Image (cartoon, rainbow, N blue to C red; front, side, top):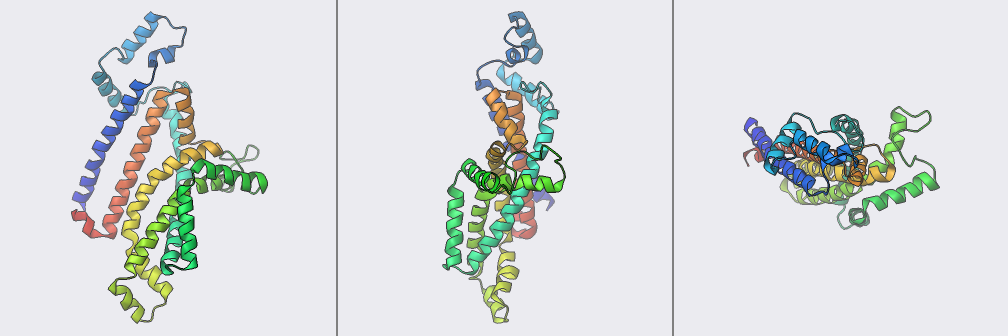
Length: 316
């Protein structure tokens, strides 16, 4: 297990290095100069040249990359051009808000996707199976921002059941109940595609396992169909489902961008959208790197859990 863990940890390193190269190259492709943006349009050529020398911007691109990577490893992402504060201080609380939204969305996706997929697998080609399949295809095809706007119009504007924006109420807001009310609509919006994909995966896994010999043995013992599916078929379908759930974390982080913008959720996605519009390069770089790190760690965790659930993958 230790060798398996070390092999998976080492596989993350080239991915993160590749992400840093892409992010740094993206910074160089954006028109403008960091020193000029920091000092403002009224700065003299001498002041800009002095700051470029101080920041190392007058050096070659490879040297600049090594300097920037060294700062990133130390946790120094520079200062936000938009907020005028260190990037780390600005992005950390917003990242926590995004984790709340992503955690709710992931929980919703796993519960609904597993339940719908199991129900469809229990009754293949039935009306329920066709309805769940139609929902999965439709849910995976609809744009996230459009779904968010429709949900806002129905449940927030028309029915008035749920708040439409923010993380807490402006007046007398706070507490878990208020947070839950605000997270429902963006959470459903971000999780819709994951629910659709997981339901299709679970359905296929259940159908495949239901044809195995041990399922016939369980039925011959007199177990009910529900017990056969939930206690035997679904249990043996867990390993591939775990791997897909790890990938869904990346999809949920991407889907959170649309949900946070539509519902004004104060997370990293909304900040990334604002930073791109303001050409806040340090903030964009930090957001992309942090997202890549979370995605890599989520896949690592999924690999480890897959190895625990199915020891055969440890030797691959």
